Image (cartoon, rainbow, N blue to C red; front, top):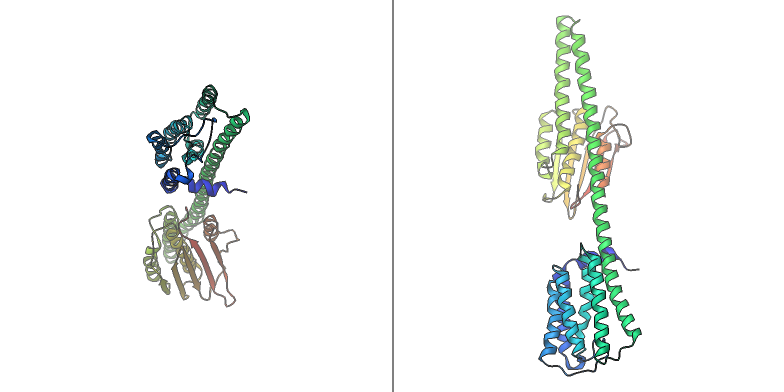
Length: 371
């Protein structure tokens, strides 16, 4: 079965395909062994090559070079050269350019496709009548067979075009669904941050009205700490929207976590490169360190980032986690959101408690994938 998606992807690069084809047809048509052994349509007798024959061959071959850019103009010129070739009785090898040009029209023409098909059919009928009036010996079955061959070339081009349009639509739909899922995830995380932290601040502030001076100071300190935590979480959430933070910013993130009181050992292998995997790797390290600060403050944490060929791998390990952290399958949105995001990129993600009580986060993020 022909893989139309593979063929359509490679056929779009006109200069790569059409130039060698045009040269092959032109040179082959001038070889003595192939003269008068090409396409024969109309049944007119063979004639030896002359200057007009070379002009007809060139008219069929040269336009193929720009066929991918101006398919209709190219097809018109190739058809004119084909008429010179056949009515002149040269029957050159260059006649193969006609179905190639017609296939390209079917592939690339965006508008007035029906008009072009009707015009081509009318020209074909007029040519058949002209050949018959000039004494051509082509039987009716020959005309029908040749017409069906041209229809097949047009149909292949149309099928390739439909496949390309469907692929573009699929990519657009996947991109929209990914954006919608990301917006929903950000909205859920924002809801969690605002609901949890702001509600806690309100409750603590209300309770402070009934406290003594000592307990009032403790309550206001708790309000301030909760506010700082809310700001930090909101910044983390906004970092998801900001794609400017890539893998090269991870050392800064690690240093900031150290200043917050978390002992972090950081190692990096390879060189960061531009791509879509960098911001996602940054987000993985950021979420893992945030969880370490929240649930295992003071425990040793190690971060390893490896820049491989076509992917980035991240490993974050925290020792002696003292409280339950959110798991990818749980109700938390941080790590679960990362799993969903990396799944969209066809990567791998895992997070969970180790046998020694620590917690590990692992991620493999393919590079060059739309985020």
